[in-house]
Length: 269
Image (cartoon, rainbow, N blue to C red):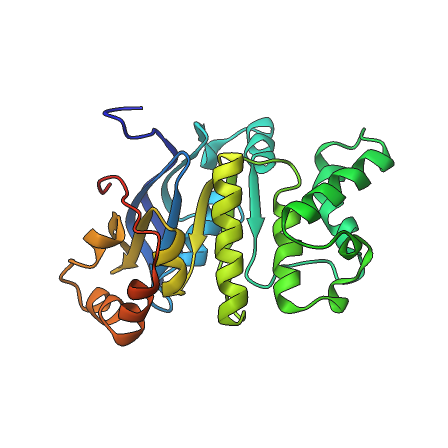
């Protein structure tokens, strides 16, 4: 920690991502600090999910450096890659649950992969604990994803992301498709878990309510890079066309007015 600012648990430097002739990222830099909820925003095609996939190892970037928990993620050994994987929980936009497995069996998948020696009864108990932690009723553990509402499937995916007690949590559009009440409840759950478990949360969203309700800082992707990473009060002052359109329209004003937290965050990156 330097000057009261937590050390970064994720460091991205000079990231380049290309798909054929299409350049998505070109020299992107980003630090994610320990214990914060950082919201990642940007227009369609700005590469929010590509950035997340590059950090968690699902995509090999064209160039640049990615460091996760002190490990050079792009040149990591097998043991180091497993360390990053064990310490990272991921909730994909659609939940990515296995449709043929119950919720409890879905939550047990990471446990079976990384802790194969655990007795079956203990795995079940741990899965039940995570299901409850994610705000689901106990009987959801034996249900199939098709028997759950959209909001409940999100929570089931979150339970699986928390299965290994990871310090890092990646959420890709966690409130997409939820009604306003369900989205607000999910936001509160994420903030509660982050505070109770000391999580660092990397959150991709287009939901302005989420940004104003729970994010400590916001990283704005535009022009193939992160053009700013700062608390919302600073982001709102940026003189950039996309920022002006996104953060100064009627929906942004409504989200800002309903934010009851009044939280202050640290200075920008």
